[in-house]
Length: 107
Image 1 (cartoon, rainbow, N blue to C red):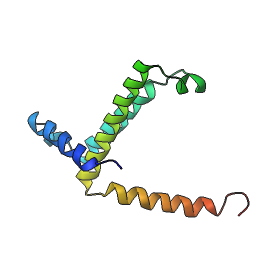
Image 2: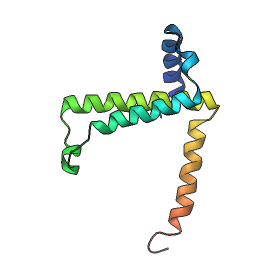
Image 3: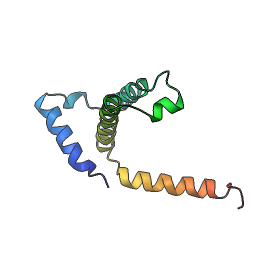
Image 4: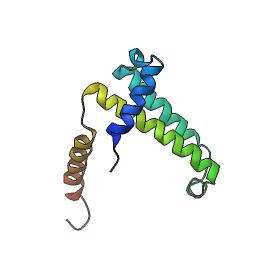
């Protein structure tokens, strides 16, 4: 399991050192999540499904970096809103399971 609180503490320390905390409103953090997700998507632009599954080491490293950026801003957004990400994920999975299990073939 991710220790996102630990990652968030480091994210906050860097933000504090650079005086970025005033910029970390929920609106700005949500925009940052979208921006970083767009940068992640750019790594796969114009690739076939097969190409996207066969990334080389350099491309995988770039993708990993963009995934980390998305995650860090997502953790920061949860903290800014006082949301428990673990609880939110568990609730969403339960909701999806309840909604989709009833509609799956054979049920």
